[in-house]
Image 1 (cartoon, helix red, strand yellow):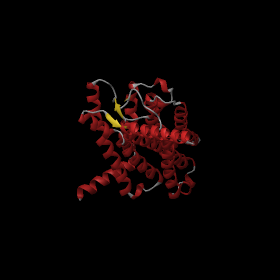
Image 2 (spheres, rainbow, N blue to C red):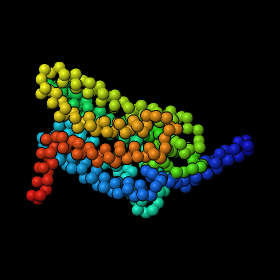
Image 3 (cartoon, rainbow, N blue to C red):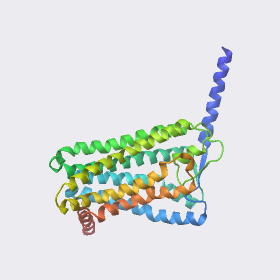
Image 4 (spheres, rainbow, N blue to C red):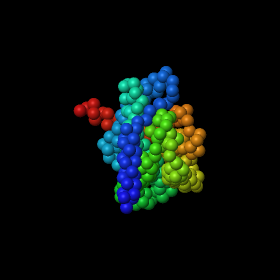
Length: 324
């Protein structure tokens, strides 16, 4: 009985020691490259990109909210995409800018896990909203008479809420599993933010189950891409059945912007995660810049410059502010 009690006490002490080690643990974010000149360049780039991302996406939200003509499913989903993009950029870029200014690259264990959680959650939410937008375009073009019934306000809210739920549900197990790992050697994260891939490479624990879960997470992330492909197959099969070029032009005018965003987003993400864990290195951090910083910045320009209604709403918004 005494042996059992002493064994339990030893286990408790080991757990407390492990918890204290985790709370004291800090990682070093290596950035986009190890060269100071390149780090300075990316600092200026992010300093330029981040305010444009915030202002651009905020203007999209305000323009949609202020113009009654844009109170429809397509723009409701676009406003939510802009909302997610604001937070998606804000999870990583401010920390990178602050570290560069303060001359440090450190991030606490808790801060690292928090950053990783929100990156996975918001990245997944973004992809599912993109899928919802593709579904919206497919319904609008292939079933125009039933569009208002299918894409009802209730359906739109459910699509957005579902995107947020799936994103957070997918992020939680990865974060909890990573929190349980031991990091006993090198603590240099090969990126400018805490991503699951470099963290798994740093761990000295058995990560086989974590890797399997990561690929399961990649599969969950890939479901929207499959939905987008199916939606656009439906769109173009409908368009090609229309015996005039008018239908083709209409499809490209309403879907072109969305296809551009999907190509930019999934093209870079697939280059990052759809490959073995061992092939990841610091050089790949440049790829992450594309979908974390560049794509959220470009989204407002892509959707507004190629959309007559959005341009009119922005002009109306600016003229209203000037007259005030």
